[in-house]
Structures are given as structure tokens and as C-alpha cells.
Image (cartoon, rainbow, N blue to C red; front, side):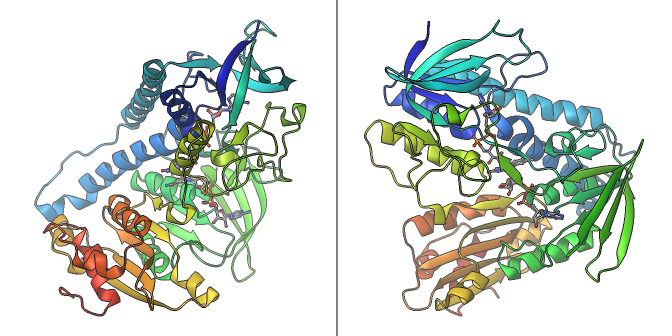
Length: 481
Ligand code: FAD
Ligand code: NAI
């Protein structure tokens, strides 16, 4: 017997679980099918983000930053630390606890909102009376033993993404690591190689460098962080160079040869010279692929593109009536908060509402030290499109709070339309910018001008004053620089 629901969500990551909660709030009967299992075979809701993504990476970034501060940062404050030692096992246990708190939190939220949770992989069976039938099979269970079937009048596909491996070099999670292995290395490697200087490469490279590894990041593109405003990317690169994070740009990987205990990587460097480096561990972070494994989209005629992304329009509608796609498995940035916004919007559309998402105001944050954060257009893209703009920046070096913190690297940069002064983009590198960027997002959502931010009272001393000063700089009238 199939169970019928108004809405069935496939995938319990930030896109799926938030969609399920919002749909339930709006009075629908909702089921969420998720395949992620914890070590005991139980449900581990939260998807990539909670289990092997945003949450554990931020836990390790925090712990490793404390370690680096204790080793190298406290002395300046007059605090001596003797006998500093690393207990990596405890660091991992803490990270695992943080993950579990988040898993448990979502289970609690499902109960509170009366979302029915199914543990297992969901596969489309076909279109039936009353909606779409989906088989749920518990992985690891004897064939059919734990399989059941649900019917959803509406189905939201939120199956997320998986890491992309290099051709011919699958992840073994011992020597060649995806994000999963990178978050679980059980001893600090002496030499760590990272392929791809993107978001994961920089965050994971930072964690292991702080804990004592010699980290080399090999990046194919000739420019560092191509998607980031040039000025901000340059400033960040300077800071990473100073920290000893070796980043080699413009490399072409030619061979990866895992041995018994290490991995040899052959590549042509930016000058075309052939090089071979050997690493104790290798993280491969070269982007992610949409995850439709086991989903059987063809069973209902659900269209995917040639790369496997579920095809959707701007409102997350697929080619099929009442079937929706959200999060990493559809176009757009692979970010948890983008997935969440889409989940909310789809649940509201199913309930007959007309929500709107402005993809131009989705912020990005890279949680390195210094942090990097941005929203809207970068200066180089405005130059390409020929839009007339004014830009102003303000360095944290001139901010009283940053000086007091002892963390003065970086700047805030505001870009505004040359004529109307409307804010087109805000770019930051420096302390606490993962939080500061929220003000810029609010300002852009309300179509604020640079002058609006410049005229708003900001607490003193605070890092947020750098944003106000950068807005003043657009009009060439900073007060503190
Ligand atoms: P996912 O989180 O991937 O969830 C999909 C879920 O669906 C999974 O549980 C999967 O098991 C399940 N599933 C798949 N197929 C089926 C099926 N057929 N049946 C049942 N269940 C299925 N983003 C940020 O915004 N901030 C960050 O700081 C950040 N840090 C990251 C760090 C790392 C190391 C990584 C890898 C990613 C990070 N991300 C971050 C990206 C973020 O994790 C993703 O954008 C986000 O998880 C996407 O959410 P989702 O719901 O679309 O998919
Ligand atoms: P990414 O797209 O951020 O970076 C991949 C990098 O690898 C790029 O710079 C690319 O040029 C490079 N590359 C690709 N092929 C290569 C090759 N053969 N050799 C050398 N370099 C190569 O992807 P990443 O870091 O894997 O992360 C995936 C996604 O996960 C991110 O794009 C982001 O959406 C999400 N994420 C978000 C985080 C955050 O919001 N703080 C943190 C971590 C991940």
C-alpha cells in the first residue's frame, strides 16, 4: 500500500528539509525521503551541508583557528602558551558532535512540523492516480526488505550534489580525498596536496595548514579566485601567501599516481615545465556534480541536461506538472542558503503564493582567514558589460575595532551605479566579513544607494564601520582614511 502525501520531498539537505518544513507550515501533508545514514545506520538529516559540508568544515575551521591563535596569535596580546599540543581526535569528536546536534535538530523540526520522514533512497516508479509514485529503498537492507512506496501530488527533487573526481583517479578517501575524506584525516599529513583553489580547496587547505601540514594548492586557471572581485582576490592571495599556503596557478595536471602511502602528482606548471610532487594526502576539490543516482528520472520523463542537472525554469518548475527541482541538483550556485531559498519559494508556490528570489543578491562567503565575502557585481564584470560605476574601498587597517582585535588585513569595497548611486556589488576580505555581508545584502534587496549606507549610524567601534566608510569612499569622502 502506498502512502499519499500532498508533497513528497526527495532529499533532506538544506534545500529539501527546509522545503518540507515550509510546506508543512502551509498546511500540506508532507513526506521527506532522505538516504543519508549515520554510522549506526540511522537517519542523518541535513544532507551534504550538515554531514560533510558547511557544518563540519566550519567546526574544523574554528578549531584550527583557535590552535593557530594559541600558537602564533596570543603572544601579541601578552598571553603566553606553554606546552601547546594538538588533540586531533578530540577536534574530530567535537566536529562530529556539532554535526549530530544539527542532524538531531532537523529530526526535532520534522516532528514539530509533522513532516513524515523516510530513510532510504527514493526512485521514481511512474505517474499514477493522485500524483507520482516513488519507491523508497533502505540502503544496506536485504532486497525489498525495507522498501516501501509513497505517492506525492507534488514532488520536490532536492537530491543535491556529489564531488567530481579527476578522470581515472577515483576517490579512495585514504590517500585521494573528496570533501568527505578531507574532513576526517586522522593525523596531520606532513605534505598535503590540494587540486583546485576553489572554495573547498582554500577552506580545507587552511584547516590543515593551521594544524601543521605543508599545503600546496594546484589550480588550473591562471587567475586566483576568478569569480571574486579582482582587488579582493589579490588582497586575499597576498594574505594566503604570507601564511605559507602555497598556491600554484595555471597548472595542468597530467598524472596522479597513488602509491602505498603517498600520492605522486605530475603536472605542467604555468611556464610549461613538467613537475612531480609527492604528497602524503591529496584533496581533489575541482567542483561538484548534480546527484541523480538511483532517482530514475526517466521513469516519469523528468528532463535533465547533459551534465545531469534537473532542468528547471527561474521558478524551479521542471518539464513535468507538479514536479519541482531545487538546490545543488539544479542550475545556479551550489550554496546551502540558495537551496533553502528555493525550497521556501517552491513550498509557497505549491500553496498558491507568488514568492520571488533575486539570485543577484545571493551572498557568497569563503570561511578562510581572512574571510572573503561578496554580493552582486564585481568590478571586472561591470567593466566587461560597460556599465558606468563608481567604487570606493576602506581598509580594515584604518578601523579601530580591527586594530583592537589585532586583525587588520583586508578591506570593504562598495560599487555603485555612476548615475543613480544604487549599490551594484559589495566585496569584502577581512575579519568577520561573513557577518558583515548581511548588511550589504539587505541594502541591495532594498535597492539602497551607497549614500544610504553612508548616512546610517553604525556602532563604534565595530567592523561594520568599514562598510559605512567604504560607502562614503564611493563619494570620495571617507572620514577615517
Ligand atoms: P544536499 O545537501 O547535497 O542534500 C541532498 C540530500 O539528498 C542528501 O542527504 C542525499 O543523501 C539525499 N539524496 C540524494 N539522492 C537521493 C535519493 N534518490 N533518495 C533519497 N535521498 C537522496 N554552502 C554554503 O552555503 N556555505 C558553506 O559554508 C558551505 N560549505 C561547504 C563545504 C563543503 C566541504 C561542501 C562539500 C559543500 C559546502 N557548501 C556550502 C555547499 C552546500 O553543502 C550545498 O550547496 C548544499 O548542501 C546543497 O543543498 P541540497 O539540499 O541541494 O543538497
Ligand atoms: P569550486 O568550483 O569552488 O572550485 C574548483 C576549482 O578547481 C576551480 O578554481 C577550478 O578552476 C579548479 N579546477 C577544476 N578542474 C581542475 C583541474 N583539473 N586541475 C586543477 N584545478 C582544477 O569547487 P569546490 O571547491 O570543489 O567546491 C564545490 C562547491 O561547493 C563550491 O563551488 C561551492 O558552491 C560549494 N562550497 C561552498 C562553500 C562556502 O560557501 N563557503 C564551502 C565549500 C564548498
